[in-house]
Image (cartoon, rainbow, N blue to C red; front, side, top):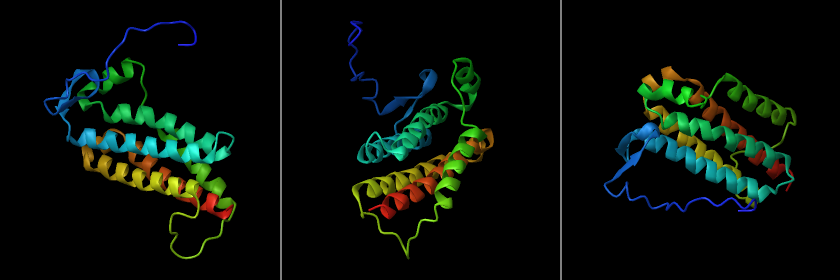
Length: 186
């Protein structure tokens, strides 16, 4: 490490999942195909897809900077999904946060900004006009999958925090617009 701090070596191979289970927050074990794991796993795939889109845009791109902020917001969203209902108070006490209306509103502002640009497109948009727009479209479909997986968690989870579904829904709209914006410049 650059600052000379040496951390003890910890193997990524914990072997605790060899029995087909994985850990949620607060040492809760569930099967690897548990709906919560599917939901936060889909969000993890979304985060990786956003990373590809961000990298393809380049660090100076204003869209890349917006995407990084979105990736940073997805971290607490995944943490929330990895927390069982009975552990929500512990989650907050540990200093974590839940997705909230301002998170959704931040995306809505970005949607509105791009829509004001009145980007033109005709018919069905077929991904692939550029590597960056294709990466954004891949992130969009990953976002839709994450939205479906969260929805599958059921009404109880949605009642606890309806902002998670709203956030993912708004994000998929934003990613579609970002891809069209990139296409309009190619």
